[in-house]
Length: 82
Image (cartoon, rainbow, N blue to C red; front, side, top):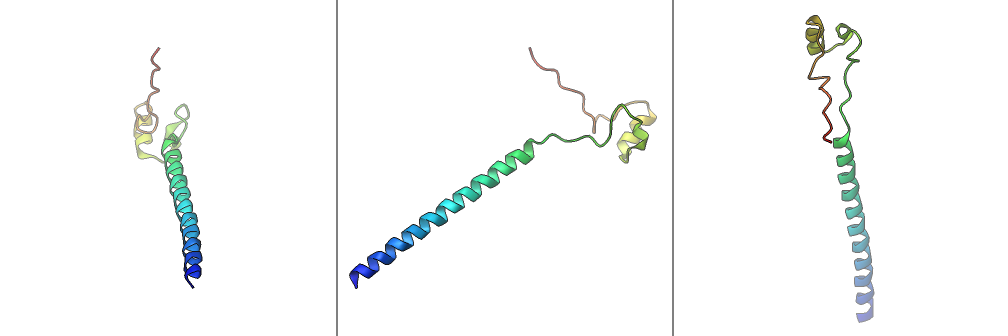
């Protein structure tokens, strides 16, 4: 009977190792997905060169009335340091 208990413990250890491995893999994939999602660049709502009055954003319409481009939806390009 003593040998039966040892085999059961060994089986439980193998099962727990698999559960731990799967948990680590799931957590790692969630972290990677979060980083990838956060790194996505925000897409503008409309083309800044086109007529912004056609855009649904109120801020774009206000800027277009002043013959400007909305800085919220179309931030100025950052200059690269050389």
